[in-house]
Amino acid sequence: MDYPVLYRKRLIPEECIPLKDDIILYMDDEIIITKWNTLKPRKDFHHGYSCYFLKEGYKVSKFLAEDDSLVYFYCDIVTYLWDRAQNTLTVVDLLADVIVKPDGKMNVIDIDELCEAKEKLLINDQQFFISVKQLGALIKLIQDGNFSLLTDRLEEHI
Image (cartoon, rainbow, N blue to C red; front, side):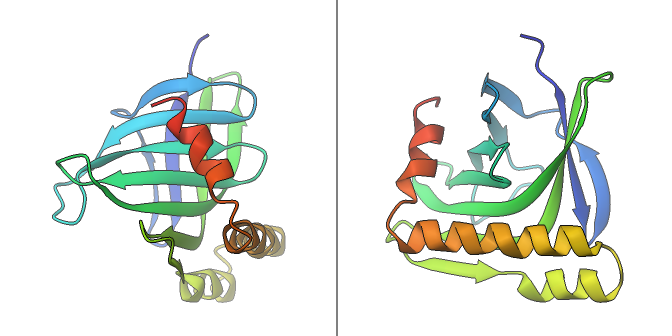
């Protein structure tokens, strides 16, 4: 299989960068699993793995310390833009995020950025509603004790 070139598109700050150092470990019609190191050195985490859930609109990342201990899971709400002719996949960050700590506690973050993007017309109505809907579905999944349905998919390929 010829893996696509991955890009990360952010709205705040506005940027679209190739994830040229990410290594695709696995891909099928439902998920893409990658291994990566931080783009810039950080004290809070060192490297990790991500699972792109192509149908659900989530990217679940396992953030690890240098000693491979779990720091937390970071869940982005995203959409995907496929360019099959160029074999690229652009992951568009829809701003709302969920952090799940090792003890299972959940923090929803960046809702203010989502609102700012809507106010500044950086996202359209459809993107806004997709973000809120997918965020709600992810929160429900976590609250219902089913987060392992996502993390198990990641773990089986790393």
